[in-house]
Amino acid sequence: MALLWTPVFGGYFSKGDRGLQGPAVLKMETGVRALSLGGAFVGSADDASALFWNPAGLERVPRQEFIVGHSRVFEDQTREDLGWVLPAWRRGERETWGVQASYLAMDSFDLVKNGVPAGSAQPWEGALGLSYARPFRNLFWGITGKVARKEFPGASGQSYLLDGGLQGESKNLGMAWGFVIADLGTTMSLGEGTLAPPTVFRLGGTKRFLLGRKNQLRWSGQIDAPSDDTAIARMGLEYVVPGKEWEAALRLGGQTAGASKLTAGFGVGRGSLGFNYAYGPSESLGAAHRMDVTFRFGRPLEPEVRRRDLFESAQAAWSSGQTARAADLLEEIEGISPRYFPAQALGKEVNRRIEESLKPDTLFTLGLQAYEAKDFETAENYLRKLVILDPSYPEAGALLKKAETGLAAARDSQARAELTRGLERERKSLRRSAQEDQRFERWPEALKNWRSLLVRFPKDAEALAGVTLCRNKIASLAASAERAGEGGKALSFYRLLQEDRPDPALAKRIEKMGGEARAETQARARALYQEGVRAYDGGNLKKALPLFEEAARLNPDDAAIARARDRVRTELKRAK
Image (cartoon, rainbow, N blue to C red; front, side):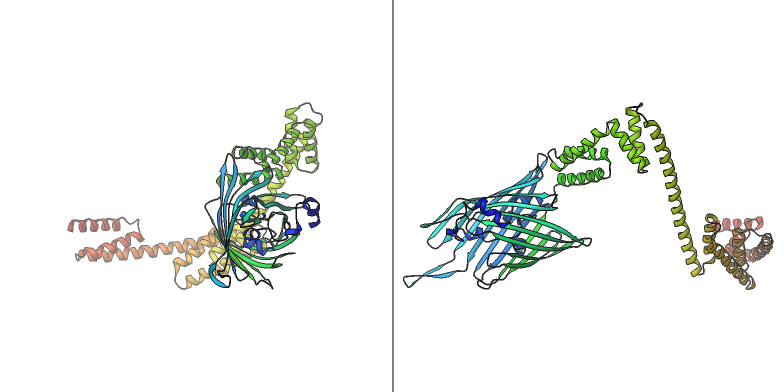
């Protein structure tokens, strides 16, 4: 691919000044993520470092972002970079502004003139730029204006430069691409000499591969054609592991020229904060260590978020055949962003289908196809529209009736299937509850659940066995309670068995035990009443009252007990 540059730009490049055009602050690449990918970044630039690589990528930064970069290069040079990205919404479309600043300085060194010390110096270079980006149809474009300055002992100068970039996607290749012309500008006068701008043309692409459900592998490739050197090929790999609130990435890159032909790095991000590190080894100049920190703040543009959500819904509606729904969503998008190209492109397809769907022949063909595919609901929809549009259309009425019959049968079958699934879920739920009650020997509850299961499924063998087991256990508990003299407890167990399945013999037993229990209760109430009378006769009203109250609770139908209780209550109130 690098050979393609030669016939296009060969006349522009000059080998006579190979590597000599500058200043270095423009030629030295920045952006730690990009550097760890070998500089293959113009197609994938989507963060604040796009300011330095491809201004078109600013349109992919979701909210405000600030980047601070620091590099220690070749043991005697330090570089600092700053960048700020500001998305905005104007006239129904997003636009993005950005500001960048770079500073490159050498360590201070001593000056000697005619063998005599002449002080010290610290040469430096700097660049300041303003960027702007916005969409055009299905592309992003961006532009950056920069001023660069160089300070050197005895000489200084500055120049004005321009960057321009594009980003887009190739659906056929399934990848994104980018193109940049960088550092196109004026010549810098520096003392008695000059420095031509280090213009470079860059073309690159990137492709993503899913590894598992979330992890991604991103491949990037790029060709650079600098005006003072031969073409450079670059390639990078980025393995991304996203978490719930964080993201981590491992990176590896390479290039065919430069001090560091192999680079590596990593990045981590959590919430609004991100950190990137890149390492570039060099045998001759020493290793380069670079790092930057990014801060994202503010909220994404509300109209852009709303537009994206609506468009995703419109795409889903279109894919599922909901043409009218897709048309309504696209109309809502038009109210937010009239020139949004993806919505316009989808709108043409939607309108074409709507226009086609109003033709009788098309409606009949679609209805027939749906009927043959046993999609009776869709067939009924198309054919009903056809009958309304053209009642005399041949075969439409007959086919509509067949579709309606098929739809009714399909709905009946669906209802039966749903009912069967619901009953099976209920069976499993009751069985689990009954089994758990049995495991913890909660026999009354288990009996109730097994009996409920038998009401729905009379032939369920496990439920039949469960009912028998539970009844036997409850009968055994009742007999044990009766032998222990716990008549009330035994009676409650017998009543539970009678409620589950009526039995005449058991009913007589319950009636007998109930009569005995009532007689015992009445006797107890009468004893308490008599004890209360003795307390009352002795003048102890406070002792008499609870005795009368308990007797009335045990035998509420005894009028004498009730009168005695009420009399004591009245006398106690008067005594207060």
